[in-house]
Structures are given as C-alpha cells and as structure tokens.
Image (cartoon, rainbow over all chains, first blue to last red; front, top):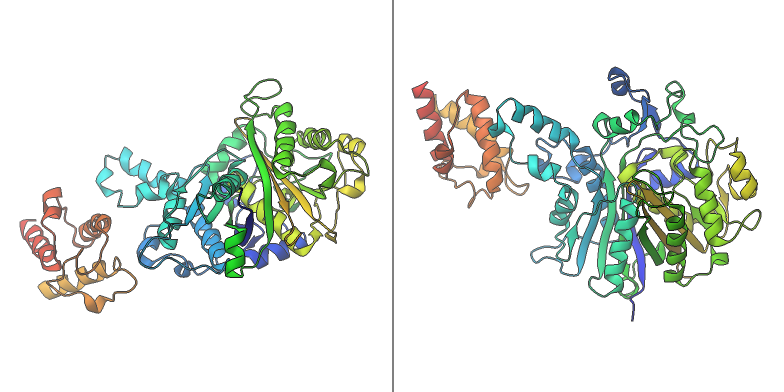
Length: 423
Length: 83
C-alpha cells in the first residue's frame, strides 16, 4: 500500500518575492524580479542582469543564531534557510526539542553552495594562511551544508541529505521526498533546493554565450520564454521549499493542504540521440512525462495545466513539441501552459523548487499566472498550440491536474504531477 | 591592564555564546565548552579573534590548554609579555 502524499507547507525566497505571500502576489501581478547588476558590469559580463532575491528587509536573526550569523557568507544557504524554515512554520510544525524527530527528514538540493565563502577560503589558502579560515568554511561550502543547517535548526531525525542534478535539482528533491513518504520510510520530508547568487555562479553561463546580451538597459524584458525574440536565459537564484507529508499525518494534524503529489518520474537521456551534456534527449523527455503520468495514474487528457521548464532559449519550441507528443494534444486541445522564468529568470538549481511552489499556489488559488514577454510567440510554438493556451494575463481557471517538469545539464529530467486536494 | 584584557576577551567570547546565555554568565573560571556551551568548533574562531584583538599569534598547543576563560587570559598575558 502506497501512502498518499500531500503538501502542507511552503516557503520561498525568489527574485520577485521573498516569503510566500509576496511571491504569490508577485506572480499573480506579473511582477519582474530581474534587475541590472552593477557588479556584473564591473566584471565585464555580457549579460549584466540577473534575478536575485531581495532579502534586505528580512530579519536574519529570526532564522539564524548570532553565532551562525558571524562570518556567514553563503547566500544560497541564507535563501535556503529562509525558504526551508518558512515552509516548516507554514506547515504548523515546530523544531524538535530534545529528541530528534525520527519521522521527519530533509532532502534539500543545490548545485554549488557558498561560492563567496569558498572564494574567501581560496584567497587565504593561496596566501599560505590556511589557519585563518575559521570554523565554518567547511559547513558553509559543503553541498549538504543547506540540509545540515536546516536539519539542526529543526531537529530532523530521518534522512537528511542534499541532491544535485543541475536545473532539475528542486523537482528531483520533491520526488525523492515523495517516494520516501510513499514507501513509509518517513512521515514528513522538507524538500526543496537553493542556488547562490553572484558572478562566480553565473560567469560560466555568460562564457557559454547562452545569456541575453542586449537587455542590460531593459532587464524586465530580457527573459522571454516561448517568444520569437527569446535570446537566452536570465540567470537567477534563490530557494523554494515544500513540506511533504503523508495524507494520514496531515489529516490527523488538521493541517492545511496545498495539493497532492500524485506521482512523478526522473530519468536521463543518457546523452544519446539528441541528448548531450547540455541538450536534452527528446525521447527521454517524452518518456519522462509519460512515466510520470503512469506513476500518477493520470491520463494525458486529464492534464489541465503545465508549468514548463521553458527557459527562454531557442529550445522552448522543442519543449512544447515534447509536451505535445507526450500528451498527444495540440491546438485548442492543449492544456494551459506557463513559465515563471519570464519574471524570475532561470534560478538554476533552485528553479524546480521555486516553480513547484508557484505551481501549487496556482492549484490553491485556481488561477493560471500569466506569461510575460511572449506577446511575440515563437512561430513554431504557434503552429503547435493555440495562443489562448499561453495566457498573457493571470486568469481564474479550474485546475485539477497540473504537470510540472524540470530539465538539466547532464541530460536529466524530472516531471511531477500535482492534484488539487480535496479533489 | 589585566582587567582591560579580561573585558576585551569577554566581548569576544560573548559573540559565540548560544542565544540562551548572556555575557553576564561569563566568569573567569567558566569552562568554554562545558559551562558556556560554546561549540568546540567555535573555539577556533575565538582564537582567531583573540589574535586580531591582541595582535598575537597562538600555537595549536596554546589552544589545547585553553579550557577556561582564565586559561585564555593567562595565555594572552604570556604572549603579550613575550612580544
């Protein structure tokens, strides 16, 4: 017997909204979180814009102890702790007091953590001054630093780990937590992911010439998923977090429920066929969507809405084609589809988790958030699905089943199927 | 002079206290780990702050002998005298 799994808490630290209410409002109102970054200009980046959560007004003292704040220089860790602790609180849960909470675990992913802290360390080491690194160089820069910090703050005693699968990370973390609860190995899992801000994370993408270069004076127009004029993804950062819980536990606690995780699938295209280190094997993408539907016991024609990966590169049309092939639906028959990346950019390792939070907000509000910057729809996309399925404005719409997918470097894919609760 | 050093040391130590302890709890005989509940990893940071504040350098052996606040004070006095 598989346990049913629901989402009972969410937290977020996104470029266009820090904390859940602000993020929901920003998505609904189509507010952009993309800004000009003077530091990137100083460093001669071609793309000098990015999505960075504004945490200036956040009281970090309510998330970290004074000792933890001393020498803290890992912004991904800060975003992750804000999102993770907010999600836990939102679920109505507290920290374990003396004994660990054996039934609660954490799977919180990242691509690379604490690059600014690591930079500090590299300078000291190269100066022959390793003894001056201080005590937190390791914990702020180890990939699992984020799950370790959250684990200690909450006292989780079940599996506490960090996954990493590039831009698939957040969605994969959710599915890993889901499977653990489903299998009866945990009652609650805090899942999510975080990604650092800054030139050391974004530089490599700038060097690959895959970021937009011509929008430094118009940051809000730069991220153009599904548009004919899409010219690359805008780098982002932040964190999303969700509390997954067995339906039984959620009911017993009388917890509020954002939606149910019906199923999902992770796979890889093996970097074969159309797949490579940086491109998706389309056969694998289609298969991933189909396997997710099968796992969720959902028919393709039952999908009401899709929240795509859709990063604003030339590959967006291919992604639409993959969805259309997998669902065997096109034109007016295609479900509503959107991408939040027009507003928040591509938050890399944090993309999947932030977007899952947004997707569940849509289920809760029974609305589809609008797409920005795709008034000039890509002609190939236009030829596959009806314009009306790509709303430019936020609209109320019944959404019962929502499919969310994320794809990442390494030719890896993840697709999750959510359903409203009660259905 | 020693009182001034003690106050400076107290200020350093107080930044590593857990949130449920206050600087008032720091006494000369307080054991860093057992009484002040300072994480052993943070002793490393206290040593670095001491080095910066008093412009001295502590060896690994000095750290091993630093159990209490007054142990630390004695080491600081000795290092300053040896300068």
